[in-house]
Length: 435
Image (cartoon, rainbow, N blue to C red):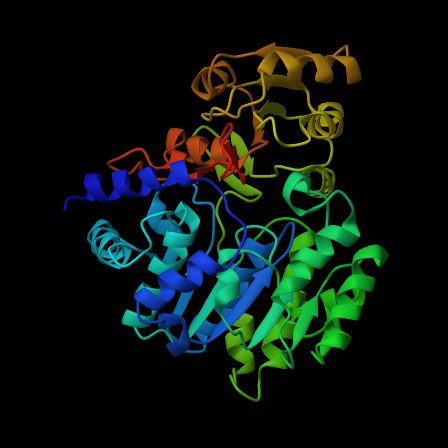
């Protein structure tokens, strides 16, 4: 099998759409020899910030000398980003071998139905981490928690970053309903930590933790300046990252009896963590600043806006924005338009893209005096703003991945792989994306 064949095999699974539930994943994992039973996990869920928190946990435990697996989604550019060991993404040979293994497992799978793309990838990751004898796996949920494919594991700790509105069509239209889905990763007797501050969501997490006798740690704003954070300048922009860092540090403290970590490893991990595409600042040779952020819901956009006000006060950037239409693009545009000096609306490279003309109408309705221009592509918008001193590119992780390639900050894979992030409801219908 060649790498191109492996990528096509993964693309073919997109036809089976999204199915929330654990049966397929558990069945496929059994055919793979239940690799999850040979691994230790920290399971991380949350509406926003879970990827950054995962990256911080990985950096800390790697600094402590552990071999650490990291499973996240979606990927920005190449599929192998989803499955990393000590921050080395799975390469083409490794992905090809994993797909060959998955093909073998599929021969034992019932022929009347098929696992989905995410279910297959979840078990591929488990197999990879077990084969490389990872000491610990930082394990990010795909969506929700209770019925997410990742929830077949028994973790050392469950982490819920926050609970905000997103994926309402799947998880529910209130914070309480969404919290109930994310609380599904809480296991009997297993420590659970959260930085959630929404009272409605906290009530659900507290009830679930109490019912399952799971020790619950709730972080407060004061924890963001607790040692060692009182002496660390995080390399990730945004005050919200201090909350994520506090959550990661608290998780490490909670697991000290089973996973002892030197204090210096915590400091080293937090000082050196990297997580591209999230408030990532790229300075061009000519002095132009490019801020890339994959914010794709109003809560994420509020965080981006706060970062602009706190770290780039007085600057009005050229805003390049593209959003997926299953997101609250109206709310996102209303939040972003007032901080922009000029706005360029672009399509996202997805069949689910919101129409740039619709985005422009919202932006002009909020800020009629601000230049708002529709561009036919991201490349066109970046060429149009090539001499602007400060650009912000946001609205979708798809768009950010595309921009990273255009700006030369990420090497394009040999085969187009960003569209592997697409998924669709199992009952049919248009594909939907998480980013």
